Image (tube, rainbow over all chains, first blue to last red; front, top):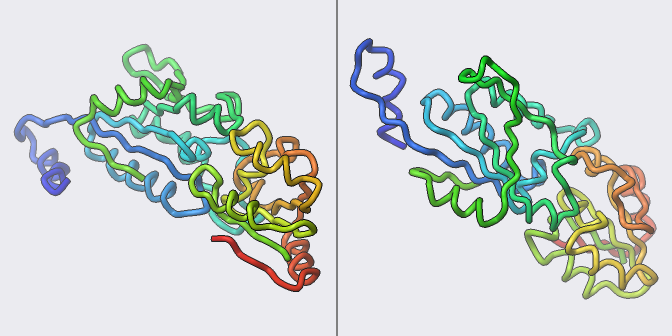
Length: 152
Length: 100
């Protein structure tokens, strides 16, 4: 990541060298609120979005709980950060892979998750779902395709 | 004795260990990420069922709401308490054991 820190400056200098796009995967395996991991991951994703890389998010194990709908944290006195996932599309973070087996083990289905969409600039800004439910095997393939994996 | 569990049963064996050590007449209160253990239709719900007649099960409502979990998803027999109810449970029992 150290070399990536130069990026914004390099982009500021018009006609700078060719940008290298890498595939980044953020792996989310923790439930929200009980620990700080989920919120920290989201913060890093938003910061990382400035570097215009090919970003994907993976939600598996307890990480699938981060995306449940109707989260209401008034009673526990902490910030409800779940609406932020819906804003990821504006940062061109449009691939949220959710593991089917992890949902099933927890008695959940896709219907229990928030609706998260993005506008596809290559398809006349059509609104499309960001969440893609994949099998464990597909998740392993997605992991194998990455250049950089950050785990939370 | 009152037992509290604050870890997800899918991530640690805390709930399992609590259930294996809790004795008849004890109360078990699930809080924080522990509330995921109170849901039906999961792979760990089967660990709760055999103890239903012997233990009193409670879950902290504000922690359910924070996680978007509706009360209709709870395993039958779980009672929802608020923070006041949490305090009452602590006061009603001689000893509280916090399983971390």
